[in-house]
Image 1: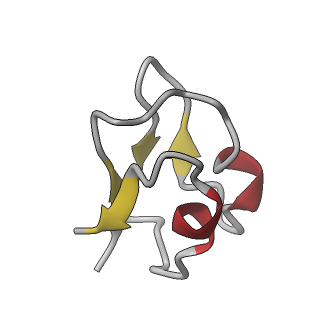
Image 2 (image 1 turned 120 degrees about the vertical axis):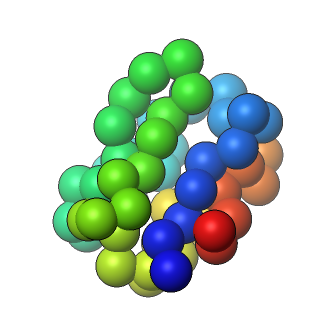
Length: 55
């Protein structure tokens, strides 16, 4: 099960460096590629606004 980034995302960039498989892409709201996500949760652990959750 991949993680998703909700509309609460502030595009701060904290999660990008934490993703070991580079599944997160930048934008107004960041997105996680479900085909690359390994469900490790590293991005969710560092998100300052709790905008990343399991799908």
